[in-house]
Image (cartoon, rainbow, N blue to C red; front, side, top):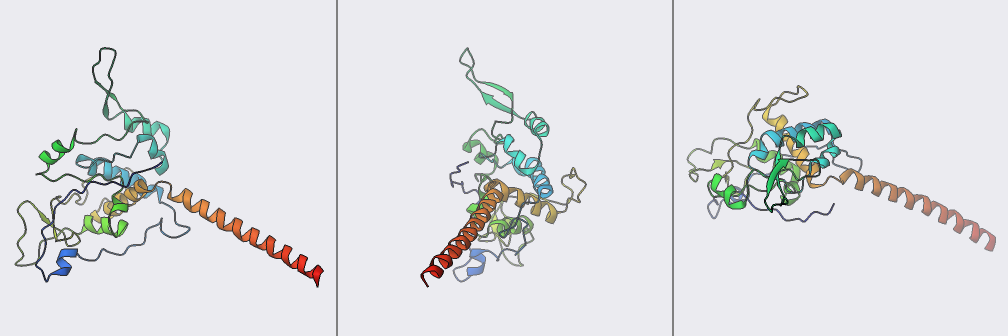
Length: 253
């Protein structure tokens, strides 16, 4: 699936003083090991399913994922019956019908995951003028990728003593400028995981980050497998050509 690398910027930042470079750039993201990293890395399906639950119950209240179709969830290990059940929880606008009118119907697996707002203007109006970013490609669109998204989710805290922020903003040491329009989205036990995993802030942040990494690059594992097959092919062909070369030159000698 081709994806346009176009992501709307959502939050605003309050820049630091001219000499406060670290504040302007934000703290360095936490360095975590992710299961999908490396040549042989693969996604953790259990984490992806928990991450989708966090996205569905928390993130999707404000953020869209315009490149996610319900049927794509087969990639995180959900069966068709479960996907149909999830899709049926939503309604989508369709039409026009025979009378020329648009109508709502239950979503089906081929539909795009519905946006929480009908248009950008409504999204801004509901969020104090800030446009919540589309999450389809957010991991690819942010420097630091997985580490940055995870750090941002766990990085909310009280501001340093004496530092004044912008009204309506929240302090996050990993966000450029230190102040972000998005309220802290996660708190312990805000959801109940279907598999019984304790829903701590760190656990939910890690799970939803992995889901967003998969959403940004669902073909990652297939691409790695193709690359390994190509490398194996090259090695085999190199061996064959080398053996052939030795045989030819042995005759000449």
